[in-house]
Image 1: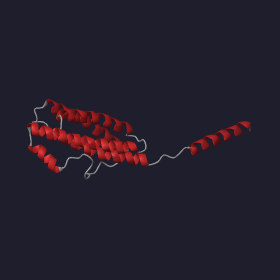
Image 2: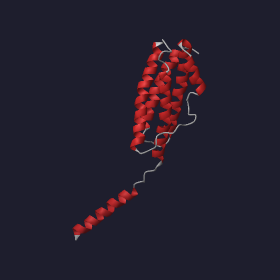
Image 3: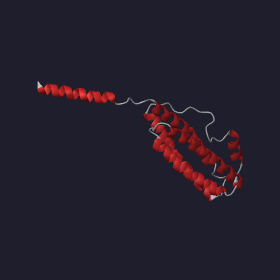
Image 4: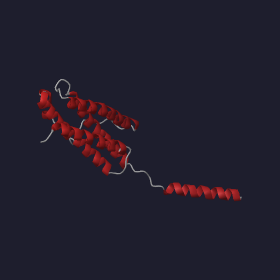
Length: 173
């Protein structure tokens, strides 16, 4: 009888402890999916911009930056797509203007230019583009901690370093 009473008391105590735990909210998951869905097309445009460098520059700094951006952002797009796939979230739909996205006129000017004029425009465009990614990452990190918090911090560190390199390559304004 004593054994049964102890069992019941332990079971009640354990179930009360479980019931007292706060229920997880859906907000972080929604924020995670939203951030990933915005960053994928944003990174894809950075890949498009990096692909424009081949044959348009002779500046090794621009070539190196484009290579690094391509390598890092291909990997990050894969991580974000994998994150969404594992959660059964839909693939990102084409979106309107996002922070730092180059418009069609800028893309056309880049495609039509080469040499130092291309280098300057490409660097300016990529600085603005990366600043947009920083803005989106800061906004995400301002919310509740989410599954992509470390990813967003990595974006902040990596893209700020690239912005610093691009600004140095642009020289004094």
